[in-house]
Image 1 (cartoon, rainbow, N blue to C red):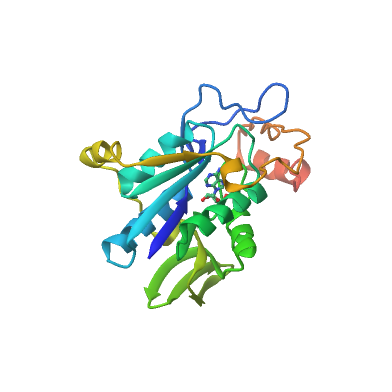
Image 2 (tube, rainbow, N blue to C red):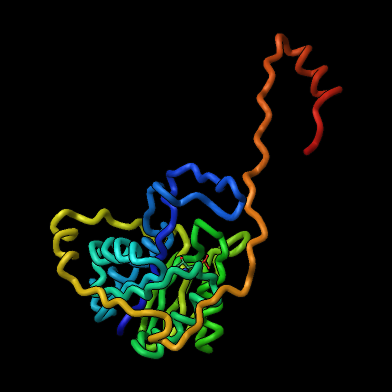
Length: 249
Ligand code: AMP
Protein backbone atom coordinates (compact mmCIF):
# COMPACT_ATOMS: atom_id res chain seq x y z
CA UNK A 1 0.00 0.00 0.00
CA UNK A 2 1.31 3.41 -0.99
CA UNK A 3 0.70 6.36 1.36
CA UNK A 4 0.76 10.00 0.26
CA UNK A 5 1.54 12.55 2.97
CA UNK A 6 1.10 16.26 2.17
CA UNK A 7 3.50 18.38 4.24
CA UNK A 8 3.17 22.15 4.47
CA UNK A 9 5.96 24.64 5.15
CA UNK A 10 4.74 27.09 7.80
CA UNK A 11 6.16 29.65 10.22
CA UNK A 12 7.74 27.64 13.06
CA UNK A 13 5.41 27.24 16.03
CA UNK A 14 7.98 28.85 18.37
CA UNK A 15 8.07 32.10 16.39
CA UNK A 16 6.01 35.05 17.58
CA UNK A 17 4.08 35.86 14.44
CA UNK A 18 4.07 39.50 13.25
CA UNK A 19 1.58 41.04 10.87
CA UNK A 20 3.08 42.96 7.93
CA UNK A 21 2.81 46.72 8.32
CA UNK A 22 0.55 46.99 5.23
CA UNK A 23 -1.91 44.45 6.72
CA UNK A 24 -1.69 42.09 3.73
CA UNK A 25 -0.58 39.07 5.75
CA UNK A 26 1.98 37.66 8.14
CA UNK A 27 5.68 38.50 7.90
CA UNK A 28 7.64 35.47 6.65
CA UNK A 29 10.85 37.19 5.51
CA UNK A 30 13.77 36.15 7.71
CA UNK A 31 11.47 34.01 9.88
CA UNK A 32 12.21 30.39 10.83
CA UNK A 33 10.02 28.04 8.83
CA UNK A 34 9.29 24.38 9.65
CA UNK A 35 7.03 21.51 8.75
CA UNK A 36 3.47 22.02 10.04
CA UNK A 37 3.47 20.05 13.35
CA UNK A 38 0.37 17.98 12.45
CA UNK A 39 2.08 16.97 9.20
CA UNK A 40 5.06 15.68 11.18
CA UNK A 41 2.59 13.45 13.03
CA UNK A 42 1.12 12.34 9.68
CA UNK A 43 4.59 11.44 8.33
CA UNK A 44 5.44 9.56 11.53
CA UNK A 45 2.22 7.55 11.29
CA UNK A 46 2.85 6.66 7.64
CA UNK A 47 6.43 5.61 8.45
CA UNK A 48 5.19 3.46 11.35
CA UNK A 49 2.72 1.75 8.98
CA UNK A 50 5.65 1.04 6.68
CA UNK A 51 7.75 -0.31 9.56
CA UNK A 52 4.85 -2.63 10.47
CA UNK A 53 4.88 -3.97 6.90
CA UNK A 54 1.44 -2.47 6.12
CA UNK A 55 2.65 0.29 3.81
CA UNK A 56 5.11 -0.33 1.01
CA UNK A 57 5.98 3.27 0.11
CA UNK A 58 5.57 6.68 1.76
CA UNK A 59 5.55 9.67 -0.60
CA UNK A 60 5.82 13.18 0.89
CA UNK A 61 4.42 16.04 -1.16
CA UNK A 62 4.65 19.76 -0.59
CA UNK A 63 3.06 22.54 -2.62
CA UNK A 64 4.45 26.04 -2.78
CA UNK A 65 7.72 27.85 -3.33
CA UNK A 66 11.03 26.08 -4.09
CA UNK A 67 11.97 26.25 -0.37
CA UNK A 68 9.24 23.65 0.32
CA UNK A 69 11.86 21.12 -0.82
CA UNK A 70 13.43 21.58 2.66
CA UNK A 71 10.15 20.48 4.25
CA UNK A 72 10.12 17.42 2.02
CA UNK A 73 13.72 16.66 3.10
CA UNK A 74 12.55 16.69 6.72
CA UNK A 75 9.85 14.14 5.84
CA UNK A 76 12.48 12.02 4.04
CA UNK A 77 14.71 12.19 7.15
CA UNK A 78 11.81 10.91 9.30
CA UNK A 79 11.50 7.96 6.90
CA UNK A 80 9.47 8.86 3.80
CA UNK A 81 10.84 7.21 0.66
CA UNK A 82 10.58 9.96 -1.93
CA UNK A 83 9.19 13.43 -2.41
CA UNK A 84 7.19 15.47 -4.89
CA UNK A 85 7.39 19.25 -4.93
CA UNK A 86 4.57 21.03 -6.74
CA UNK A 87 6.33 24.32 -7.25
CA UNK A 88 4.42 27.58 -7.57
CA UNK A 89 4.70 31.17 -6.33
CA UNK A 90 0.91 31.47 -6.21
CA UNK A 91 -0.46 31.77 -2.63
CA UNK A 92 -2.31 28.46 -2.40
CA UNK A 93 -5.70 28.21 -0.74
CA UNK A 94 -7.17 24.89 0.48
CA UNK A 95 -9.36 24.26 -2.59
CA UNK A 96 -6.36 24.74 -4.87
CA UNK A 97 -4.22 22.45 -2.68
CA UNK A 98 -7.01 19.84 -2.63
CA UNK A 99 -7.37 20.06 -6.42
CA UNK A 100 -3.63 19.61 -6.94
CA UNK A 101 -3.53 16.73 -4.46
CA UNK A 102 -6.45 15.05 -6.24
CA UNK A 103 -4.52 15.20 -9.51
CA UNK A 104 -1.49 13.71 -7.73
CA UNK A 105 -3.63 10.95 -6.22
CA UNK A 106 -4.95 10.14 -9.72
CA UNK A 107 -1.32 9.87 -10.89
CA UNK A 108 0.21 8.09 -7.88
CA UNK A 109 -2.75 5.85 -6.91
CA UNK A 110 -2.10 5.68 -3.13
CA UNK A 111 -4.54 3.75 -0.92
CA UNK A 112 -4.19 6.26 1.89
CA UNK A 113 -3.60 10.00 2.12
CA UNK A 114 -2.67 11.22 5.61
CA UNK A 115 -2.76 15.01 6.06
CA UNK A 116 -2.49 17.19 9.13
CA UNK A 117 -5.83 18.14 10.68
CA UNK A 118 -4.94 21.79 10.07
CA UNK A 119 -2.05 23.99 9.11
CA UNK A 120 -1.03 26.26 12.00
CA UNK A 121 -0.55 29.29 9.74
CA UNK A 122 -4.06 29.78 8.31
CA UNK A 123 -5.93 27.38 10.66
CA UNK A 124 -8.17 26.36 7.77
CA UNK A 125 -8.61 22.67 8.60
CA UNK A 126 -10.19 22.36 5.17
CA UNK A 127 -7.79 20.60 2.82
CA UNK A 128 -8.33 17.01 4.02
CA UNK A 129 -12.15 17.12 3.86
CA UNK A 130 -12.02 18.95 0.49
CA UNK A 131 -9.66 16.32 -0.93
CA UNK A 132 -11.92 13.49 0.28
CA UNK A 133 -14.91 15.20 -1.35
CA UNK A 134 -13.09 15.74 -4.66
CA UNK A 135 -11.94 12.10 -4.70
CA UNK A 136 -15.27 10.71 -3.49
CA UNK A 137 -13.31 8.82 -0.79
CA UNK A 138 -14.32 8.28 2.86
CA UNK A 139 -12.55 10.48 5.41
CA UNK A 140 -11.42 9.91 8.98
CA UNK A 141 -10.66 13.34 10.40
CA UNK A 142 -9.02 14.29 13.75
CA UNK A 143 -7.52 10.80 14.01
CA UNK A 144 -5.91 9.79 17.30
CA UNK A 145 -5.53 6.09 16.43
CA UNK A 146 -5.38 4.12 13.18
CA UNK A 147 -5.64 0.38 12.56
CA UNK A 148 -5.45 -1.16 9.12
CA UNK A 149 -6.87 -4.64 8.64
CA UNK A 150 -7.21 -5.88 5.06
CA UNK A 151 -9.13 -3.35 3.01
CA UNK A 152 -10.50 -1.48 6.04
CA UNK A 153 -9.01 1.24 8.20
CA UNK A 154 -10.41 1.80 11.68
CA UNK A 155 -10.02 5.38 12.86
CA UNK A 156 -10.48 6.64 16.41
CA UNK A 157 -11.50 10.28 16.12
CA UNK A 158 -11.28 13.03 18.71
CA UNK A 159 -14.75 14.52 18.92
CA UNK A 160 -16.35 16.90 21.42
CA UNK A 161 -16.61 15.11 24.74
CA UNK A 162 -14.97 11.82 23.75
CA UNK A 163 -13.75 9.48 21.06
CA UNK A 164 -15.60 8.12 18.05
CA UNK A 165 -14.41 5.00 16.23
CA UNK A 166 -15.28 4.62 12.55
CA UNK A 167 -14.40 1.95 9.98
CA UNK A 168 -13.63 3.14 6.46
CA UNK A 169 -13.10 1.10 3.30
CA UNK A 170 -9.78 1.89 1.60
CA UNK A 171 -8.83 4.06 -0.24
CA UNK A 172 -9.38 6.79 2.32
CA UNK A 173 -8.30 10.23 3.51
CA UNK A 174 -7.14 10.65 7.11
CA UNK A 175 -6.28 13.84 9.00
CA UNK A 176 -3.90 13.52 11.94
CA UNK A 177 -4.67 14.97 15.37
CA UNK A 178 -2.16 15.72 18.14
CA UNK A 179 -2.48 12.45 20.05
CA UNK A 180 -2.00 10.11 17.07
CA UNK A 181 1.69 9.66 17.93
CA UNK A 182 4.82 11.46 19.06
CA UNK A 183 7.02 12.06 16.02
CA UNK A 184 10.63 10.86 16.27
CA UNK A 185 13.61 13.16 15.93
CA UNK A 186 15.40 12.52 12.67
CA UNK A 187 18.80 11.02 13.46
CA UNK A 188 21.94 12.40 11.78
CA UNK A 189 22.44 9.24 9.65
CA UNK A 190 18.82 9.49 8.51
CA UNK A 191 19.27 13.19 7.68
CA UNK A 192 22.31 12.22 5.57
CA UNK A 193 20.42 9.36 3.93
CA UNK A 194 17.52 11.72 3.14
CA UNK A 195 19.84 13.82 0.97
CA UNK A 196 20.09 10.94 -1.49
CA UNK A 197 16.36 10.26 -1.68
CA UNK A 198 14.67 11.57 -4.84
CA UNK A 199 12.47 14.68 -5.00
CA UNK A 200 10.58 15.24 -8.24
CA UNK A 201 9.65 18.84 -9.06
CA UNK A 202 6.54 19.56 -11.10
CA UNK A 203 4.29 22.58 -11.69
CA UNK A 204 0.52 22.92 -11.26
CA UNK A 205 0.18 23.07 -15.07
CA UNK A 206 1.76 19.58 -15.29
CA UNK A 207 -1.20 18.37 -13.23
CA UNK A 208 -3.68 20.37 -15.32
CA UNK A 209 -4.82 22.40 -12.30
CA UNK A 210 -5.22 26.18 -12.09
CA UNK A 211 -4.24 27.20 -8.53
CA UNK A 212 -5.44 30.84 -8.77
CA UNK A 213 -6.94 31.94 -5.42
CA UNK A 214 -10.72 32.37 -5.27
CA UNK A 215 -10.82 34.26 -2.01
CA UNK A 216 -9.36 37.71 -1.44
CA UNK A 217 -7.81 38.46 1.93
CA UNK A 218 -9.08 41.95 2.78
CA UNK A 219 -6.84 42.58 5.77
CA UNK A 220 -4.89 40.89 8.53
CA UNK A 221 -4.59 42.57 11.95
CA UNK A 222 -2.93 41.65 15.24
CA UNK A 223 -5.24 40.80 18.15
CA UNK A 224 -5.79 43.72 20.57
CA UNK A 225 -3.02 44.04 23.14
CA UNK A 226 -3.86 42.91 26.68
CA UNK A 227 -3.89 45.79 29.14
CA UNK A 228 -1.36 45.72 31.96
CA UNK A 229 -2.65 44.29 35.27
CA UNK A 230 -2.97 46.25 38.52
CA UNK A 231 -1.59 45.30 41.94
CA UNK A 232 -3.91 45.70 44.90
CA UNK A 233 -2.78 46.39 48.44
CA UNK A 234 -5.22 44.22 50.38
CA UNK A 235 -7.95 41.62 50.12
CA UNK A 236 -10.51 44.28 51.02
CA UNK A 237 -9.35 46.44 48.12
CA UNK A 238 -9.48 43.42 45.78
CA UNK A 239 -13.05 42.65 46.81
CA UNK A 240 -14.01 46.29 46.35
CA UNK A 241 -12.47 46.44 42.87
CA UNK A 242 -14.12 43.17 41.87
CA UNK A 243 -17.44 44.61 42.99
CA UNK A 244 -17.09 48.00 41.33
CA UNK A 245 -14.62 47.69 38.45
CA UNK A 246 -14.47 44.11 37.19
CA UNK A 247 -16.42 43.51 33.99
CA UNK A 248 -17.31 40.34 32.16
CA UNK A 249 -15.53 40.63 28.82
P1 AMP B 1 -5.33 23.47 6.04
O1 AMP B 1 -6.60 22.98 5.42
O2 AMP B 1 -4.70 24.61 5.28
O3 AMP B 1 -5.47 23.77 7.51
O4 AMP B 1 -4.26 22.29 5.92
C1 AMP B 1 -4.55 20.98 6.35
C2 AMP B 1 -3.48 20.02 5.86
O5 AMP B 1 -3.46 20.03 4.42
C3 AMP B 1 -2.07 20.34 6.28
O6 AMP B 1 -1.81 19.86 7.59
C4 AMP B 1 -1.27 19.60 5.21
O7 AMP B 1 -1.24 18.19 5.48
C5 AMP B 1 -2.13 19.82 3.96
N1 AMP B 1 -1.68 21.03 3.22
C6 AMP B 1 -2.28 22.25 3.19
N2 AMP B 1 -1.57 23.09 2.40
C7 AMP B 1 -0.50 22.39 1.94
C8 AMP B 1 0.62 22.70 1.09
N3 AMP B 1 0.78 23.90 0.54
N4 AMP B 1 1.52 21.71 0.83
C9 AMP B 1 1.36 20.48 1.38
N5 AMP B 1 0.35 20.14 2.18
C10 AMP B 1 -0.58 21.07 2.46
